[in-house]
Length: 447
Figure 1 (cartoon, rainbow, N blue to C red):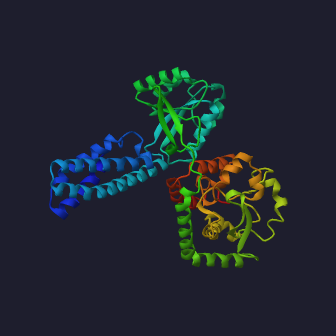
Figure 2 (spheres, one colour):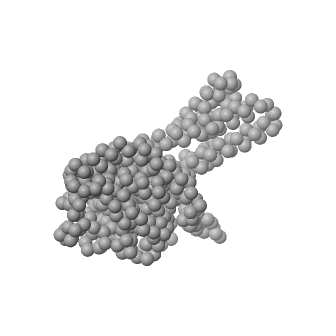
Figure 3 (cartoon, rainbow, N blue to C red):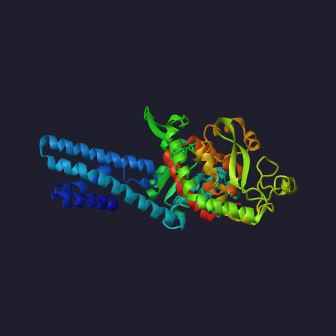
């Protein structure tokens, strides 16, 4: 609220200095905070909701604009209406900017383990273990699991290795909240958590000052695709269909090609230097060409800087026993002896990916999308997963690349790619692009 008040005051003072009128300074700051409050901008967790927060701010601005227009109808003096409509865009821009700055400070604190919301998980051991693993990989989500109450306490060993204590069964949840001092309880889908049990749990948590969060049955669904629709007093969760048609993606394709072309121009000196280093380090071409499967199953040639010796493909059978994915279609070795000295450096900093900008310019790839797979990798996937994955172009960066890359198990990488396809939005692309530099600098899973 103080942040939003500061934004409104700054815009109001600007209007005062420009037009020497006090009306906006006297009325706008209070009206702005009230408008935001009416649209839920001060609810708990509102700063986590990027697109929803944007809508709340715009709706508050629209409400004030309508109010100023109504006041002008009864008091036809142009000054107040003119000043209000002039100040509103400034207020909206300042509010969004300050809120984003606060969100970034919050995420930085969460990443370093500060100001975390503490939660106890209630549900099956396997689901609890998956959730703990997910939160561990996303250290800047602001949530820390401090205990579990399981519907199957005998399987607590699946969770305990992650350093999270088990407080017993579902009936022990209230005691777990008191002992752990947590802020929330996350209930996972389970036959052992019926409606009556959840209702009693919500009453107990209300008395303890903790909130109850219900995880949906369907995982990996973006919040923008979910809406609560009441029927006969029963709140039903409505799941909107994913955006898979090409028309909404036209701006994405145009932007991809424009930014990739600009990147090629700006990075040309660096790419020439890298190519020269590769040729000096080992014999062979500086570029590596490989067949990949793209949009609607079409084959294309992906371009990367060569990071291995020329005979790497012929020597693959020698090291098959070291493949971290077993005997499947995927092939990856930690400290692969076929990688050159320059190649190891390029992989660590993801510089070997730069020639793929040419694939983006030609329309074969996007800046953000699922990982481009080889034909063997593609046809090793189940048919339904393969069909969904091929509805979009593969990307230079993506969800799995910014979530740990090769450190992730194969199932997790497939899940993240499918999650991107089903939940695609421009905001998701922007978040992935914003996380990409950090993933490159950390170098996790880059080998």
